Amino acid sequence: MNGPGMELRVRAVIFARMNMNRRNFLLSTAALALSGCTTASLLKKSTEDTVDYQRERVSGFFASVDGKKLVVLGTDYHYVMDQIGDLPQVLRSPLKPRLNAEFSYFDLDHDNHVSGQVTLQLKGKVSDAERQQLQMEGFECKGFQEEVWTKVYKVRGTRYLAKGFELPASVSKFNHDYEIIVRESHSPGVKRAMVLLTPVTLAMDGVLVLGGIVLAPVALVVLSNTHWR
Image 1 (spheres, rainbow, N blue to C red):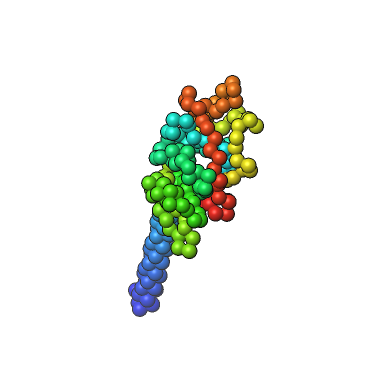
Image 2 (image 1 turned 120 degrees about the vertical axis):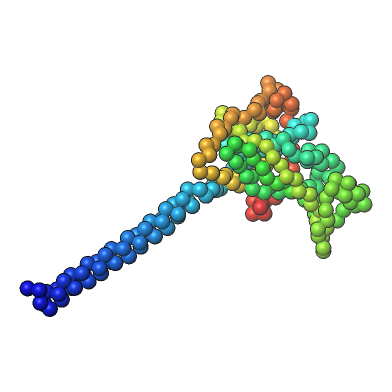
């Protein structure tokens, strides 16, 4: 019973078990590696910010008479900008009839703070007085064959809900609606703040008011949507 045949059978069984253990080990290692990759992928996705792009139709562009705030009236939201530099003053200067405006994206964070750029632009030949005024206001000439004067304003403020607000027909607004693109960032685990109702109100005489300060419409030519950045 203990001859060479028995010894061969024992060796065969041991060898088979070794192969099985090796195969199980390799399969377990592969499964663990795959699981680790999947977990890492899910973790990466769960910690990355996402960005949504929304179109906001804009019908009015207003500045407070004290020159401290700029208000963009959209269909769904109002954007009250309180960090605007000297933009209102420039819009009341003798240059205004020749100025065009261009809006960048409006970037929105989880606290409903909004930031963006407003670029004022003047094209064409200018007089000596206009050139002096442009230089004094901080415009830069970037044209070659045609003079193109530009000044970029970085503006910041807050977005408010326009629910229940209707712009009366008596208030001056754009000849037709324009659009701005709002980029809204979402961070995992960060709860978005509630959007407050607009502080813009309508007085008895049909005048728009913000915090007791009258808002005056800004009759400004806004560049075509196809040129907006």
